[in-house]
Amino acid sequence: MNRRGFLQLIGATGAAALTASCSRINSVAGTAPGSSNLIRFPEKTEMIFLTDRPPQLETPIHYFRQDLTPNEAFFVRWHLEGIPTSVDLRTFRLNVSGHVRQPLQLSMDELRSKFDPISIIAVNQCSGNSRSFFEPRVPGGQWKHGAVGNAKWTGVSMKSILDRAQVKAGAVDVSFNGLDVPPLPSIADFVKALSIDHARDGEVMIAYAMNDQPLPMVNGFPLRLVVPGWYGTYWVKAVSDITVLPQPFSNFWTDKAYRIPAGPNGTESPKDLAKDTIPINRFNVRSIFVRPEPDEIWHAGIPNEIEGVAFDSGYGIRRVEVSTDGGNTWTDARLDPEIGKYSFRRWRAFWTPENRGQYRLMARATNAVGDTQSKEQWNRSGFMWNVIQQVDVKVG
Ligand SMILES: Nc1nc2c(c(=O)[nH]1)N[C@H]1C(S)=C(S)[C@@H](COP(=O)(O)O)O[C@H]1N2
Ligand SMILES: [Mo]
Image (cartoon, rainbow, N blue to C red; front, side):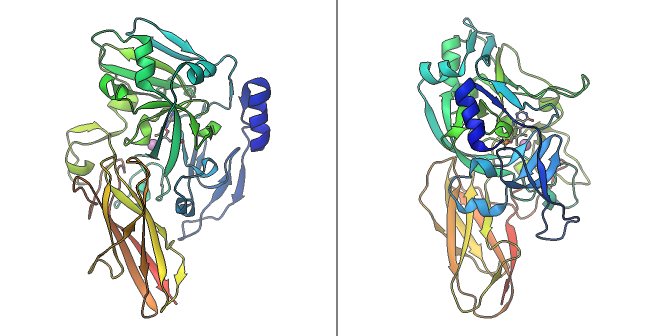
């Protein structure tokens, strides 16, 4: 079904469906640089293929030349095979229950009409973005740098929903469950939680629109949690059940998975694994080259525009420095205007290589509280990669 057919279906019947079919564009084998296995899912463009059951699709880097990542190119990550492929908006309700005086069952119409809408531009990034660069290698989705995207999210603040539900004294956590289901009873349902204070900070939101359009089915239609500055694992998709808890939340996905070493920047040594771990939380600071892409050939004697994006957990990017000589000398890149503290901050630098040859480019971002990127980093889960990126470019 094409996009228009999909939207017409929502308009005409209040129901939306996703055909489960998808097509492989190109089956290049191997991992040679630049060779990507592309796939097309309903409502999505050609994406870098990791897995299809459940879908894990990566955004090609050239989409980051735009401020906002188009919905059709936004990365996709699910844990469980049983993902929702259709949602009937006539019967769908967002349920709010647990430690509240006024449980709620909200229809999409009520969410739109009974609450003030808010919008926020924010980066969503998978904890495992760039995992394929860890050395020694670690198991898990072998993402390059495209398990991240920047979008304008519109919906209702979690605070306004919780206020309407009248949270009782003594609430500790709020858990979020989506419509996806485990394939076997032995596999834990994907449920995540935030502290009650975090859930009520006025920024955490339930989004019904992404870049002013309904969410694509595989990005959480009809509603998803948006947790600005925090890793994607908390951004529960197709969220249907919110439970306020008078005790700390606990399940496989918080007690065993998505934990990082308690030390600085979630780092540990492969030879001496950290004994203390904590739940993954806010983004560290990082920068990603958008141009040149690894296989681009640039020209001597003319100005080439180096371009990238940087972001952090919301302090804001203060500085991006670029090196064109493998890190010996650094110059400041020009930052584009800030379009939101949780957004990508775009940067660019003009560079006129004098001679032909091979050059090593590097970029290093620093945020408003002085955090910068790491020189080396490792952890067993392949989380929070923010090593200063190197791109080798051929000047012809
Ligand atoms: N219901 C549900 N929500 C989920 C997940 C999931 O498996 N099920 N995965 C999470 C993880 S780990 C990430 S990185 C983001 C990815 O969001 P996206 O697919 O829209 O890019 O969704 C999060 N929300
Ligand atoms: Mo993730």
